[in-house]
Length: 349
Image 1 (cartoon, rainbow, N blue to C red):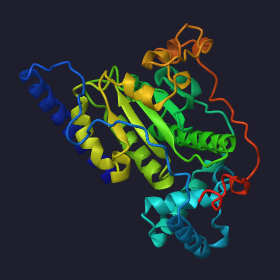
Image 2 (tube, rainbow, N blue to C red):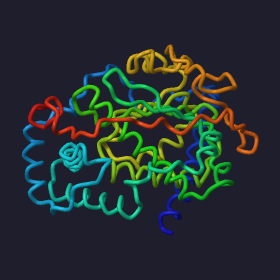
Image 3 (cartoon, rainbow, N blue to C red):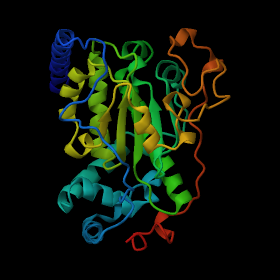
Image 4 (cartoon, rainbow, N blue to C red):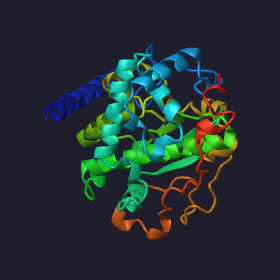
């Protein structure tokens, strides 16, 4: 397809950029050093309290107009129904309060969910759970200092070629959708716990072990999942923190950066090995793995003694005992967030 052809060109550009960065690093005596950021990714400091749970007068006015123009059957099912107004506000904010554009994107989301049975995606276990757990170390763990769910992933250790021995590329995309739906459930549960709307998450991607060469299939999957996130789950991201980024990551970032919209790019922070202070600033110690400067060791999770992340192994040699269970089921109250005194749009003003 035209999209695949473009990805091939992008991968070639990544490899060119990486080769250029490697040559520059060698000339400057920086070969093997960390990614140190550049003028496009200045160091981020501070952790201002979120305001996304406050519904402004502009939000309310645009929301009333959008609801008046939506057809009666445009209310989503189960997963998003408990925060209907807030869901619409996310689309309005993503489209900078262009109501017609927000409606178009919102209805496209509903059509996509229906076509791909997204509402029922968590109802059954993932048949490829073991594969993902063995070759893609990750963990949903705790919350940041403002209550946003945190997700950790050892991205640099993932080898898409190994994954594709056991599945097709669409299976990787489906897994990402499962992840997003699980995050939505975590946010809903947290909203109920805190008594205010929590609609964003924090993602930590550890690039340690990143290969110099780029996997075309991996880039293709990343581009497609990025499209899904921006089109169907807008405004669900608080921050992406990339840590242990090697010098060669510069070439990857130069090409990947344009795939992200402006608001998403502003939420990305990239660090080499000097990231612990920043993570400690954002995440309380009990939700931060000890390896990252926190106190959480996730004791008893893996039989091999690892704390929060098992080592990557081929599926054939990955014992069942070291495969953690599927993501814990989220038990939440069957109530509408709009009915709560501190979560309703009126009370959130």
